[in-house]
Length: 214
Length: 271
Image 1 (cartoon, each protein chain N blue to C red):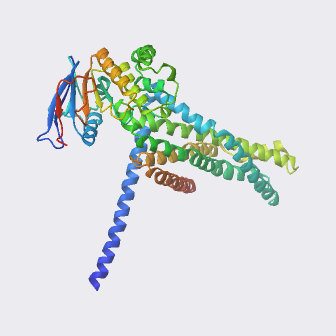
Image 2 (cartoon, chains in turn blue, brown; image 1 turned 90 degrees about the vertical axis):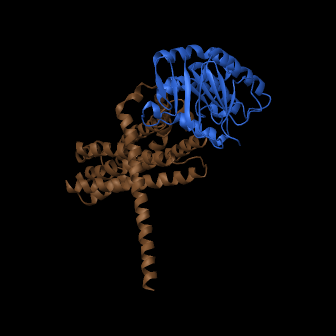
Image 3 (tube, chains in turn purple, blue; image 1 turned 180 degrees about the vertical axis):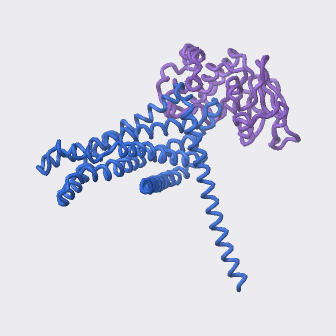
């Protein structure tokens, strides 16, 4: 069992800083404006100076160990899907999907990712487009690449920043289905940073947590 | 009246102080930036990362292989020009040994590393700032962070290594081509036998001078690339900053090449 916890994250417009957690198989949504989402992501990504565990603000707990946000051990088990950017423009879709594995160069994980790649590409409907440059592809394809990377990485927790927003109307149902199906396959926990609670994108969130009144 | 006069001078002093402090801080930041990349390069972890090697190969192709025809063209003209200055001068002084000495001092030690650095700067420098700047604007730096990828190791290091390697190889090619072409043209015009010309060049070029050329051929492109990447890393999210940073990068590199070249010449003079 893995659990991503956060503590005392300042919430713009909320009465007091936010604390909470999300674990495998649970879908949680934080409602907050985009500016605050970026602040959240900053907390997740920046490698903070090593501090005692009591000073951690976001961390991942597993059965065996805990990892502070921003550390390689944390980012290995937590997949982050950004709304603005899912792929490197100057790489092909194949290279984008394999990028973290090609960088971290753990032979076993890379081999596994290369083995899983055809099935993931088929699931995403990208089999014929793997050699296309990401810069030539639509933002929708970039979201699919983010999703594909998560499928290859098999993370304990996925943090998605309004990933459904901005997708063309005609592509939205297909993305919705694929995203929900991927979560079912992975059994990962989902922390969805959303700017609106009007739409749940078929993800059946456990509870919305309001991060901001705006 | 006196008070106003002093206040004006205080204001000027404050401005000068502010500019000096900013300059010193920028120099420190540049030093920290370049030394962190060189530190990563020396640790050699990157050699085991296929993603970094892929970027390195692309950069070598873009900077070195695609730049090769231009290098040959520049070497042809530079060789002919240099030899047509050196050989008649040596003949007029009735001392053919000057051919080797002047070729070594002018072409091998000065022209080749400086010209090749300028070539890399104009051809690939602006492209580097634009490419990295656009990556920042598109938020690709955040994406790389989210994948646990070190920006210095993945984006900057391969470009610096490619610049240094290509700078060295292109400079050596430049020297070889320019000397051979210059010598062949001089032989064709019956000014001097080609073999005799090569012997004079060989006599006038010591191992130390070759090593100095090698050092400059590595150092100048490294300085250029360091400055360009430093400026590119400061683009932020505003597209209007790309041309500004590219200009700073190119001008900063030029100034640094000249300063370092002068310092090397002064150092050699003292030794």
